[in-house]
Length: 59
Image (cartoon, rainbow, N blue to C red; front, top):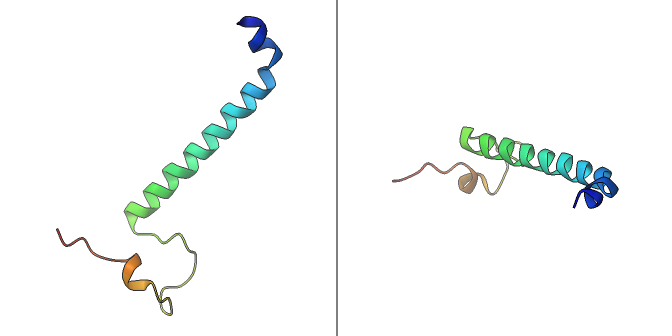
C-alpha cells in the first residue's frame, strides 16, 4: 500500500487539488443561488426566462 502511494503521489496530490477546486465552485454556486444571483451573467431585462429565474417561493 505504501509503495502504491509513493509511486502515485503526484497523481494523488493533483486529484485532491482538483477535487477541492470543484467543491469550492459548487459551494459558490449554491451560495449564489440562495442569495438570488443569476449564473447566466446577462441582464434580466430582455431575458425570456426572467420569470423562471426569479420566482418567489409560493409555499
